[in-house]
Image 1: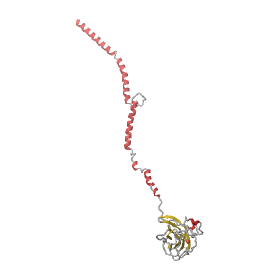
Image 2: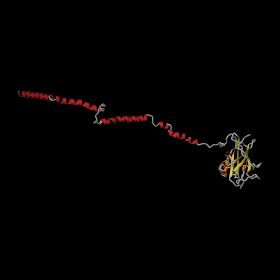
Image 3: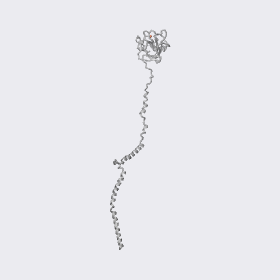
Image 4: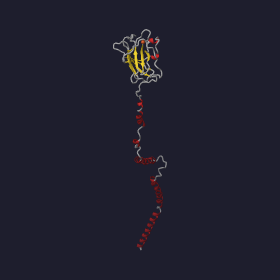
Length: 286
Ligand code: FE
């Protein structure tokens, strides 16, 4: 009997113990679940923010990602420029094929300017002549001696006076040169004295193929009543003889000479061996 009681009491105690365990585990179990549920919902939001691309545009000046965003965007640009540099046609390529600078090419073309130097005239000097204007005739005077020698120099060694070389043309009325024309000179010496017994300072010459003549002589002197002058007879081939006289431009007595004519003044220049006189005769042709 006593053992039954002990068995009964143990059973009761066991029941109570089981009942107590069940009551403790079921009662306080709800609060912990309620606290952990919110934590689960917020967790996914936190993990999506860094991965999403839309988070970057959010204007947040304090957030450092804003500064990093341009850095990321710049990288593609640099790579793009590198790719462009490689694939795009080189900009420096046209330079070698381009024509040279215009200044460099223009320089040689401008060099022909210096070639504008005047070419030395090869044509003979113009002959002083007025068509139809015959050389004036003058008196022969009393001292002509016939049959003078042919020569182109009346000058003799030891002869006093200033040497004078007379040159010029014998022309017809159309100012055309007359080759083969006879030009006969006679004159007084530097003291104004004629050689009336001989042929000193007397002689004639013929014009060359171009109608030119030359006679070497001396500057004549004055004699009473006459300014310095040189007598001359010009006879073209087959034509009439023109008799006249030549004068010096700077002779003082020209102003008082009754025969003097400005149309018969010789053009004088200084030569190496004396004076050079130029005068063209215009005579009536054949
Ligand atoms: Fe005379």
